[in-house]
Amino acid sequence: MTTLTEQEIQYNMRAVAHAIAPEELEGLEVPEFTLDDLHRAARGKIHTDEVIRNVYRRFNHVPMLQP
View 1: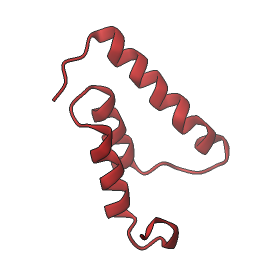
View 2: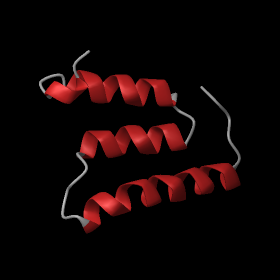
View 3: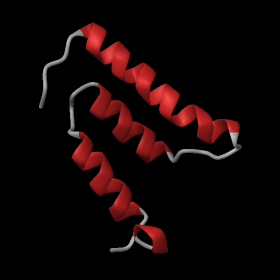
């Protein structure tokens, strides 16, 4: 999808770690498939839009995520 430098990938991976840290501090667990999507996006393998679509698709039973 997108070719990123190693520096960009490392920056993105840190951003993912910072994004999920508050969840973990609250005792919540980010699902493995969501982490996988976030890591793939950080590496430029998928676009962030796909991550969002996947979250909506996987959690379509959650009322706040329904249109």
